[in-house]
Image (cartoon, helix red, strand yellow):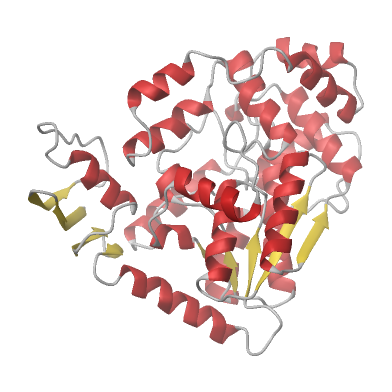
Length: 398
């Protein structure tokens, strides 16, 4: 059950919502224009600060209108205490994207944290991402720790996923990113990992058929076993039980998403970073990686008909950051740049050490899904039900 009680003073009236709804299925909010529907959704998403009230899912209080800022203050205090005089309070993942960049700025400039800024280089950084990372690090006077993934191994794994025929070819990058960060935290006894994940711009999930769980090591190993050509000796492999159970509940390493505790508007955050650091904008979310750009803008929509912009825009619409008509207009154009896609296609092929013809053959091959390979999907299903029942798990990537 989801319980919502929100009170916000607006121009001319008071929005006072008090209701309970099932935690499954679809709930429709309707009312006259100007009655507060968008404001209510923004408050639930955390973009609008309520004067009073709360949002409760099961036994877990997600938001508390009066104490929301205090919640983050309390978390930050615990993070500082956990460092025990070390050089760094926590690890903060940094991709160069808007979410992680804005998080870094807020946590350092307003909350005075001393993070170890952690970047994983899988060989596909765009120049814009490199520039943005440098500008944030230099502008905030921080140090950057970069972990470089063995190129030959991740290249072989990416080729294996291309050969598999499945949609989720970006798993090798994503898996390496969080596995490396978790491993570093565990080895160095760092108790807090901060990420830019947030409900404000990611409250709608991609369907599982589009983007399967990147942490499913059983599927990763099965696809590599079937299509890989070299052993994965240094590539970081994790599993759901290790980072969802062992690390948080036995070793005490916690993953925190601070942007869920503060009002987060993507456009305002972008403009702030541009003004303060000369931050460069990306055409689309996740385009800091050239492989991800190819994957989301061309591979998924062109081969499978999956357009991730629909999911991204839906999140922004639900949280009042985009109008539906604006989203529909943007979706009329392809996600990729029609003038440069041929050069991009050639770049991806050359980087992977294959011909354009071979890459095109993977585009044209019979379509498969994650269900065609071994997986731990049942573990995710059981774990999600268990954690939700305890009020521990809200969602997010697995």
